[in-house]
Image (cartoon, rainbow, N blue to C red; front, side, top):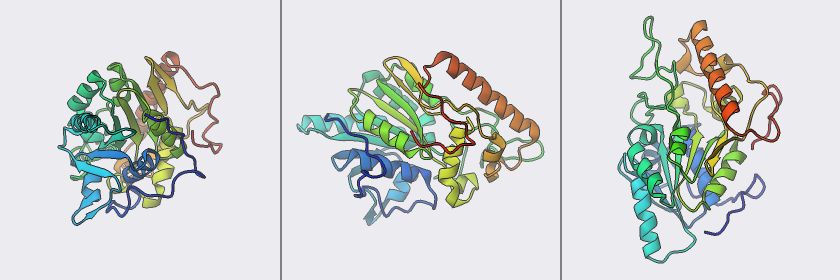
Length: 315
């Protein structure tokens, strides 16, 4: 596979491979898909399961994809990707990419077994999970990646119910535990970092996985023009992180000296409107414990990211 030079804001192609879709205003998942396909280009086979991106991208008689694209079964994104890649090689095709875009439910829950198998076989595919933290396409039900305290239709919030009582599955470390060839976390709030990782993953001789944080204004109950701000603030507040795994090692890409207030990030979203002081404190304790472990066990950037009070560049 020919190396891909990561584009930047000036060199990113103006050609669109995902356009005219029916996604909600402010959809973080559609932005992640759009950016990734700009990096990968037209010689790309795209597989999406029965989730948000298939619902908004395949609306007969219109197709929002400018690449070859197909809808897979909900649990079968990775297995269909493997089959597409094998078929393309059997046809003698060269310099092509096979990429799957699945949501958090289609990845961490329904699609986990197929993804696990693909990693185990070292299938040469790129799997991108756009994480909007619930089953948004079917009515905002809780998924394995719904964070603690979030209100969904299956984890309601009231006087005696606090929303989701479980933490997000750590998909990044789950795939890393398989000995995957390359894995990374990203956020649409830091687009250059995401673009760089897509370009890197596209040249991996084996299985690559990118987990990109992608807000959903409809399911989160936030303003549609806040998606990028929230995606950045999730990282700056320490509730999401930018990291890579390769050659058996984890590495943080960004290590803020200080975190922005968790409360400021959560209070912009109606799904957290019921949280009390003790809930915010519990979320901060969990964050601090996770960061203490990552900083202790993982390699850290050569330069520490500025505090979130100072504007930071992506990457």
